[in-house]
Image 1 (cartoon, helix red, strand yellow):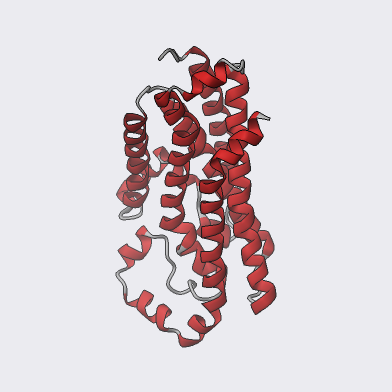
Image 2 (tube, rainbow, N blue to C red):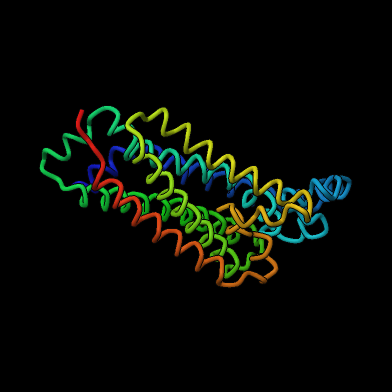
Length: 264
């Protein structure tokens, strides 16, 4: 009952991310053949400075070879990073920060619903939201492939979705854990957003020069490497790290929330 109620309250933003991104991917896939035929984008990419292409992980020689190559440097680059940050912030805000700030969470506790049940239910909502997000993204590209014969490699496609799903889950639980540290939703939003923006900037700076490559080790976003997946050079180490971080921050979220003072 609690999960169903939570989903009804949050389905607008969940479907907004899922359907909105899927429609974008479908239309980009639909116009890809005509874009590829003109060669305009490929020519413009080759005219850009190599340093700029490196920052956004764009291989100008391969970007227009197939749809997934284009997406790996387009949607599955900076666009996905920003969407992932917004998605995580929305989740933590809607399911924890604002309910605590408004006192709504005390109504759940008085139901009575245990803190453990509440946290587990919010994490189930996170899983549902992520599955819808990456699932509809993948299905929209498969539908475009069937309609426009784009010759998409489904193995690579779903590896991208799996990697993206793990990143979304990790950012979601990190945002949730950080939100549990504050009673003010606006302060929680600002601090969490600031931390994620820092990681995002670190990931961009990492691509500017080899001198800054070590910075990639402290950014969550370095664990989502679409170009490596496209080159089939992506090992299981990134997945292990993401799963480990997911478990760690989930446990920290449980521990913090069960000890949090919820008095109004």
